[in-house]
Length: 470
Image (cartoon, rainbow, N blue to C red; front, top):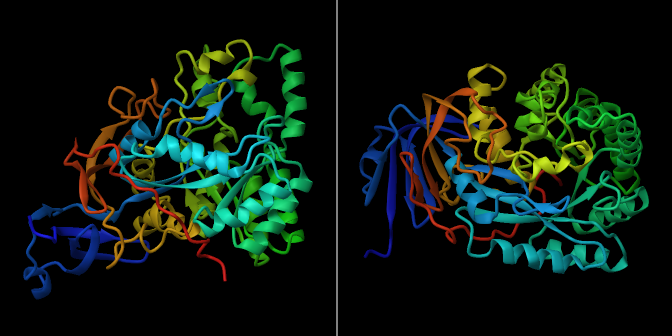
């Protein structure tokens, strides 16, 4: 066996966040070795053990999903995808790197949570992975630990203004964590909803007998997302201009808060998710208990908010589309909330659908092809310190490559998806475009629609700090 393994991808349209070129891609020892114009003398001279014909197809970087929750404990149960099933489904969907959330439990060290998540993931992953750290207990000890985690490549910390009694941090704790991050280079991620006020509205709704899933959306009000987003931005300013990344932005008013901050030159970033772009409160209101399938937080919003989210993605007031993949089976898990919407586990499956749904957005004219790659691959890689290994196709980058067929139509369904969950949030939706072949660090893990990957191929990737900061 030769010491160098080479793969050649010929004839495709190479799309990155910045360029579209008809080029051949040479892969050597798991990395991109070179690109050359298709038909050029340089490309014609290349030889390789494996050649992939990408004629008529797109050649794009593997997706980077910067917001997943594999095996997350929530509401007395666990997310139904573990790192093995979840990363395999990611590969099927053209995502080759996930950044999952290690959870600190109150009263325990950050290190304990991080070690627990390493144990969950080690040897299980089909594609590469990294971790953010959820801060549930801000104190002198955990503030010091933040510095150590940044040094070893866990460079982002998520805080919650929601979920009192579970993940919630008050403004004082948030301020202290932000101050610490401004010194160590970490990025603060924020779940921005006023959980204290929401809990009052939940209690009042249940007292009125309003127990159906649709009430989940009604109590988690748009204004309480906007208020928390505003408050998080001001706290970050008070902390010395700490960079702030607001996760799963769902509503026009929250986008406006982020846009206003960015127009003042503040380092404030926003993420949205496919569920807010393609689903709405109409789904939460589906008859019977079907709406439980769509319970997540922030909640789905009335359809009229979608236009503001698409506009935010076009104007770069929102920079990233992640999934917040956190699946719970309808049978036996979502059903825990029959008769009490507040007991429905919060979360949707989606890690397998993101790249296809965003390609559909290209087809529909919401975004350009390059913007598709920017919001799904390049920006998340830069935002979370994975660039230039991930999110692009350039010499030296990891050979995480997707050959994408932009013409094939497919219908999304639980019957054909690979996520370990008994329903699809997009059941019956027909989209144009399909992942055909996927390489992870040069290894073919999906070969023209046949899975060829394995648990344990994916490796842990330490991250540098956010690359959008000076």
